[in-house]
Length: 269
Image 1 (cartoon, rainbow, N blue to C red):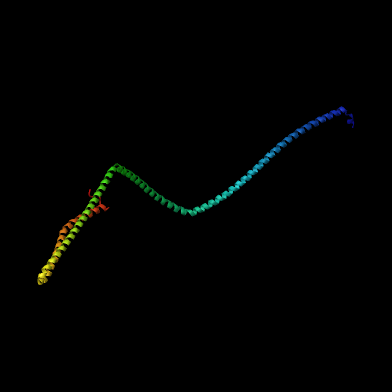
Image 2: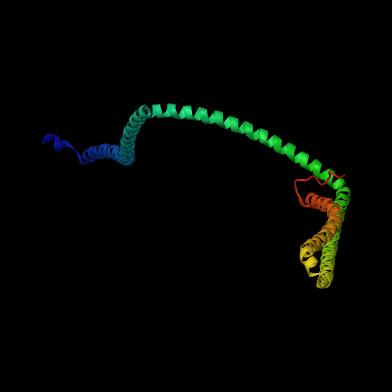
């Protein structure tokens, strides 16, 4: 109380000013610390947000990796199952594989032989084509000669046919002449027989007894006479028939040579 009473207003104001200055400095320091803390808090919140985003991204990545791992595990199991099945299948297919290898080797050998034969046939075909080309060139070069030869062969066949036709007409005329001669001889023999019979009848009226005895003899003579006369022309005609027979044989032979395909048409040449 005494001290307070002894303090003057000036001292009190000085103390208060000092306390105010002290409190002001402390407040400024606190405000500065507050601002610093606020900035740090803002930075921390921003960092927290970034970290939260990173955590979310990491979580998403982790889930994706887990799904990938699960999918890979599933695929690995599937591949293991397929590998196991393939191994079993290989065990079952090994005998079939050996059989197929044997068949393949046989088919390969056969294909090689076929290919060799095909090459030989191709070479033969090329050779035949070259030969045919050479033959065609030779034929073209000698075409006029073949045309002349063909004309000559046609003329030869036409001459042979004309000769055969002429020979046939000659034989036909000869036969007609022979038939006409035979008819004339028969007619003449018949006339002679009738005349002799009339003469015998006239002679028989005078001598009946002699006629009865000699009539058979005369009849026989009369009958033999025409027979002899008939045989005589026949014998006369026989040389003609003998002459005609070789002609007919030659004509038939020539016609056979003309139309028979087995006979060589160049034999006469």
